Structures are given as C-alpha cells and as structure tokens.
Amino acid sequence: MTLHRHWIFVLCTAAAALACRDLFQEQESQKKQARLGSNKLQVLPFNDLGMHCMDKEFSVFSILPPFNVVNAQAVFRNPLGDPVVLDDTHVELRYMAVTDPQGSRNSVSHPKTDFWTYADDLFGVSLQPGESLTGLYMPKEAPLPGPQDMHYDSGQAWFSAEGIPITPLDDAGHYNPYPLMRIGAFHKGSGRLIAFTDVVVPVSQETDCQNCHATGQMAANRPGISWSSNADIEVQTKENILILHDVEENTQLMASMPVLCADCHYSPPLDLAGTGPNGNQIGNPTMSATMHLFHGQLTDGQGNPVFPPDGTVEETCYQCHPGVQTQCQRGAMKTGGMLCADCHGDMLAVGGAHPLLPGGSLDGQNDGQPRRPWIDLPRCQSCHTGDAVNHMVGSDLIFAPDGIRLMQAFRNNDPSASPILANHKRFAENNNTLYRFSRGHGGVACEACHGSTHAEWPNADPTHNDNVTAWELQGHTGLLMECNVCHVDGTLPPTMNGPHGMHNVGDPAFVDHEHEEFWEHNKTSCKACHGLNYEGTPLSKMAKTRTFVIEHGRRITLTKGTQVRCDHCHSMPN
Image (cartoon, rainbow, N blue to C red):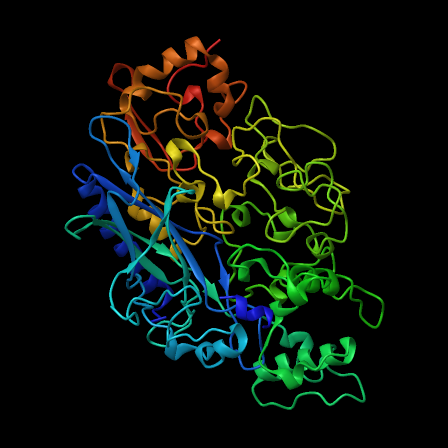
C-alpha cells in the first residue's frame, strides 16, 4: 500500500467599499457593545496559520488540498469574579457561513475545484463531494446543512475545526482569499445560539511557478526536451515541473499523474497523525528542503542566484507563497517594516543549509542540526526580548528605532537564522511551544488576543476582513486591549497582573488615582512600559482615543497611538 493511502468581490468603488466597511464595523461594534453588559459569553476565534494554501488544480500534481483550521475559545464573563474559559460540558461551538461587509459569502466548495475528482488517486480516500480529508464540510454542503460542529481539544483548551475545505472563490465566483466565517456558541442543553464572533478563514491558490516553469521560461527551455504545450498555463507549468523532475531524477511522474508530492517528500501539514517521515519519504529531502534549499542554490546563466538573498519579497517568497495579489504577510510586523526574511532568514536558512545554533531549535533537541520544517520557527521573544527596563543588548542585534524591540529575529552574520532566545520572558511564548499553540493570561490563546501568525492585529488596511474580529470584540482594531472583552465592568480590581504584566485599561479610577499607589510601591513596574524617564514608549501607546477626567475635574483626551507619558496629565515625578 502506498504512503498516501495512510493520509487521510462583490466589488464597489474604493470609497463605497470603505463606507460599507465603516458602517458594518460600527453596526457590529454597537451590537456587540450593547450586549456586553448583559452578555455572559464571549467567543474568541482565530485561524492557526494566518494563511492556508491549496492547489489551483489537481490533475497533474498536488502540494496541498483544501484544508483550513479555525480554533476558538468560549469565555464566560463571570459577573461575580474572574472569567472562565469554558469546555464542551457547557457549550458547543460551530462554524457557519456569513456575508462579509463587501457582500462576499463562501458557503460551498465542491463546484469551485477539481479536488474531489482526483482525491482518491492522490490520497487514497473515497470522499463525498465537498467532504474534506478529515470529514468536514462547508456549511451549505454538509449532510446536515447549517452550522457545523467544532470538536473540543482538551489539551489546548479550545474548540477546533481542522480541515474545513474552503476555497478562495466565493459563492458568486469572485476571488476572495480572506472570507469570513461566523463562530457561534450554542447552549449545551437547548441548542440556542448565545454568542458569536466572525473570523477570517484565509485561503489562497496563488503561486507564480509559471514565471520560471512555463514553456520557454528559464526552467522550461532546455533543448532536446519536449515541454508541455497545454493551453492552460497552470497545467502547462505543472506538467513542465514533472517533465523536469523526470529528466533530473530519472522518475516516471508524467506517466503517474496525478502525483502527490508528499508521497516522496515529507510534508508536516499532510502528516495528520504526526507520525513523521515513512515509506518513500525516508531518505528523501522534506518538501520544505526540496523547495527552499534546492531553489535557494540555483543560479542563472551569469552565475547570479535565481532567488537573491537580499531580494524583495516579490522576487523571492512571493514567487511560491501567496503572493503579489494575496499579500499573505500583512499584519503588525509588515506594518512595522519587517519582511519574511527578517523572521525566517533567507531560502538557504529555511531549507536547512546551515546547522542551528544552541537554542535555535524549538525544544533544544535539534540544536546543531538542520532546522525542522514547521517546528524550528521564529519566536515572539526573538524580537520582543523584554521591556524598557530589561531587554537584550548587543552589537550583533538589529534594533527597532525605539531601542527596545528587534527588527530581526536572529543575530547578524548567522546564516542559519537561529531564533534568538530572550532572557526576559515578558513577551515570550510558552516554553518549547510555538506561538500558535501557546496560551497566556487566564488560559486564553495568544492568537485569540493578538491575531494569527502573519496577520497579527491590526491590519494596516482599515477595510480588511482581518480587522473584523477585533472590531466585533472591542469596538476598534488592534490586539485585544479592552479588559471588558472578558471581564464584566466593576469586577476587576486595580491590578498589574493583566496580560504581560498590564494594568487595568480604560478604567477611570485607575487613571484618576489608583495608578499612583502602584507607582509608589514599585516604580520599575511603571517604567517597564512608560520608559526609564516616564517619557513613553511604544509599549505605552494608546490603543484607541480616550477621554479621562483627572485631578480637579480636568478632562484630557489622548488620541490613538499616543505614547503615554506622565506629563500628559501632571508633572513628571522625581
């Protein structure tokens, strides 16, 4: 038995779209905020990766099937004390189709792809039309259409839908790589919908392999080889890749279509059981090494790298990853000026050409070895090494202008791009755990408050669907900063024990007088975010514009983005 048998816009003008989005956000925010005082449940949904890719067609070969993941937590807003993250003994969570602010809706998948024509040949499974490799369906195509169940993962303490077969074509046939889904919490006994939040389920088919592999291009112009003449540029490009593979590796892939690349090249996202390489994969490079290392070593006729180490994202990553149109790297890091290579390193580093430095592997078990794909990845603490009082220093580090955060997740002159481990763990993920699996304050998932990898809130485009979740939960974009997303107003005493050591946010009493008591007892705790001289830092910036009543009844307004310093309200302390 072969290995694979084990595997299971409606478009407006820009101005109209912006107005449409603003109206939607305002309505959703008002609706959620109006319910906040009485609503006892909050749904915190998040995509695991920030982007899922799938093949545009499956007749030639397949790298990735339609397969998406949404996780979510249900938080009980306890009117008598601390919030509680609920398990499946209290609620059921389900995903359902929803129309986004621009009119795009995605509820079916079977008519939009040829995956189900070739699924048996590729994966050795007999699927019903619309059924994913894990048995999930799009809401309208399921045997029982409507909201679809998410299973509870007790190890992660969240609900999950792993394998939603969503495609980037909406129900009107328009391309939308950022469709929304609604995650609803249903009462365990009555089945009544009691809370919901919308979330992006990102998916793209965009690759630019044709730039090199279409007939006549640099990877499909060798004399003496019969290159594909298929009129479909996608099929032509993929056939040329198999033709080249047959020539270079003495294989017979063109005679074996459709081909599952992971039959020979281990691919963690297709290893659903987590068993590791086996069968034909043993002895062959992983899919990541095949793509990154092989292509990273290629040179053109003049001896120059085909993918220049210092090239733009469009010249390198977006030749294969989505992409110039999709813009999968789109979150806070991109807004801050960081590129893919600033976290991951260049293609040779990603492909494992250089052994990892001590501490470079996720769990310390792979130090000194080539990095493991999907495991040995950049970490939050690699750039967020501490606060204004305690953070990493060194001449081999690339600092952001604030002098606190880093702009590169590895040290200068480290060809392996081994992630930096911070000594100060204020902003670190869980030990030996990736960000997407980590949890923080109150057991809430890091991605639930900060957004998905590659799409950390906010998206700089205010009209982007990525921002809808934060808008619905707290009434503004950006990471979740409002305590009353989870805490009922009046139940949270003055504290410095919030996420990452935060104090109460938006609390008039804390602003008026309670913060002074904390300062008198522990001045360092204030300096950590507000600066060594209380001059303000990016760690103290306003998440939204707020007006406070302070000493002697004075009113002060601090606008969004302001780095809060003491003399905004009173004189600087001695």
